Image (tube, rainbow, N blue to C red; front, side, top):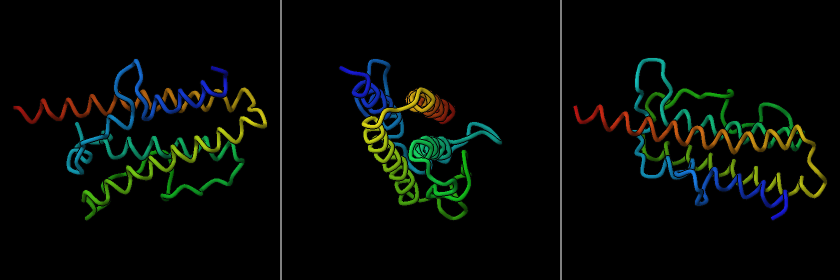
Length: 156
């Protein structure tokens, strides 16, 4: 496996493919309802929904850097963390739409990386792409922890 194949493989393992480290990001949100995604472990703490959009945003941000695109082109207004659910939008359809946004951003990033590899990627961008992999894995673990906390609190 060459460096280009490895980079794309790592992106996919961190997001959706079977990996040695356990659940990836996509597996971590699978089966989570809108109500579960909106649950907060405490005041001012992020929920699963917000972490999911945060991951989508950073996939977009790295893709934008590779493409040298303009800032502010993300599908949602704002950056980094997006308070969720929006008032009156605690619905399965709203949660599904934003999981779909994560999926689209992952796909778009992979296409951009594949295209950029043909031209050669500078080390700075290679580090950022690897950072997306680490970021996905970190937040997959965070989401699993939030799910477990929620389950434990529900038993009491």
